[in-house]
Image 1: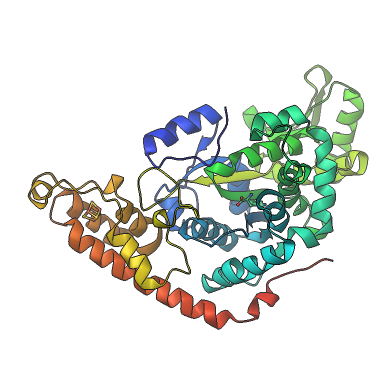
Image 2: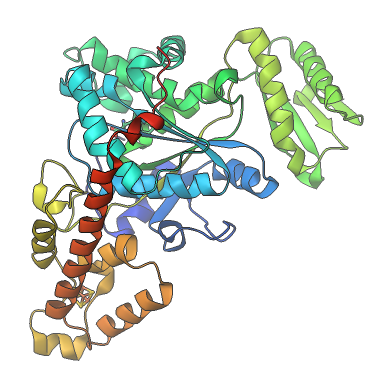
Length: 438
Ligand code: TRP
Ligand code: SF4
């Protein structure tokens, strides 16, 4: 049971994937003005998103964390993660961008200096050109953030070698830095809940499905450190449940103390169920209650966090099958591709067209299996009405692949031309986004 960089783009397989790995189907219906990746189902899965939805609805603070590996050029697949992160920021999240320079060093052999240069030139400047916000947003390097490395080290206590082998396929030949890299990512994801980075709050990590192993590991570690678990129970009460079998009464007392501190008064303690029901609390109070529980737990065992949430987008590629990849230049459009080269890639891309023009006039095309249509859907057309018009014309055989590809190639060429101009204009402004702790 292992997801490695997952290699398929067909929706049927994604359904199976959700089931197999216990990922929730993503429901965008309650999001305020969902960005197109969310409203078009490109973001197809999530773990624990109800926490984030709750924070958005209640206008409570939450964090958004995304990471980039500065080992190769940035492509449109990477942009999808940023698009999600910027949307989640726009609805209230504090945005953190982790530059995984330690991971690039450990797993790809780049020097930290080289990783830094790639991060700035390829990624951070592109992010700025794509609209990275300045407020409530910071970019940092793993190598200069002590809190991340300390947390990685401490979190390591909850993981053993056999877990790492099972999740990542590590073996006796894996170098120790590589072995440790996933824990640094755990540090990335959890450190935003430390007091000095905003305190305990729900955290969402938008990623491609290939990163799910890291999320499962992080969620297990986060939950593994908790002493209690607060949730809305049936009949609209809120319950705080004690996770361990030791000192249940003491911990129930702690929970009651925390809840009293927040002003709640009506408690029902059932030691047998290891539960404290708070009868004058409602579902909307769970976030505040859990944050207070976490602070109290930290004063006892040091590490307690909201279990981080994640969202998963499906991959979009110019060829069938694989995800966009730096190692297959024809599958991906790089943000630094000369616009004419990117246009050529679109013209060569895999479409959902029929074998001949005559056939396509009769049977229509298949936009759902067309990478050119995917580009429109994910990146180039924001207007839903316009997109559905294109889709219908394709299906009805009134839109032909030749002219369609040409139009999309031109759109892509313009998009990249504009982006590259803005990127060049970004100059040294990246320094205003980066926070270096040490
Ligand atoms: N491992 C990620 C990648 O290969 C990069 C990364 C590092 C990351 N830290 C992160 C992604 C935290 C999400 C959250 O691209
Ligand atoms: Fe794809 Fe356009 Fe051809 Fe339809 S007409 S299959 S959208 S390239």
